[in-house]
Image (cartoon, helix red, strand yellow):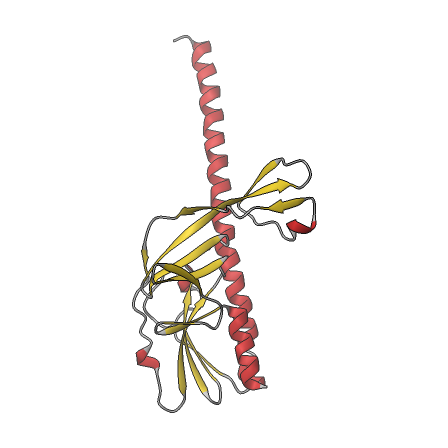
Length: 227
């Protein structure tokens, strides 16, 4: 191989290496943004919860790191919140740092998630099909487009397991104890299997040994109790 050919090959190898590095950086930034978003939402929740300790007589006891569950699910309870009448034993649950997912419980310890790949949109007057990927347009029916119901999902990495949460160690007879699985960030939908049918789980709904709450739903619950 001549010197000119080697120089030409070197240019192409350098260009290819730069492209690979650029793609790696973009992927890293996307993943980092998702985790930073989850951390931000957790810190926002704590910033609203902690002041209640002073104003409303709500007792807040942190049991573990408040951000560890974003990276790893364990059986440890994360935080306890007590009002005058109730004791909430809370486990943070972050099934995915991606917002556009659906969460399906098979049992309290088994679940799977589906990733929303997109929605089919139709131009009202022309009938032209548009594929909108990875997001759900808001108020689309009020504009030129209308959404069909054939949402496209993809199961992500099969069935997953949630460790058996040690709620019982923190129960008390002095107050009503409620076990809480706090899902954050919130998926598009949370459902469970009931007699071969998928039933929705909303914030505040009870499922087996615990209640499902979003951070906003839980704070609203506290507001109702402390009014």
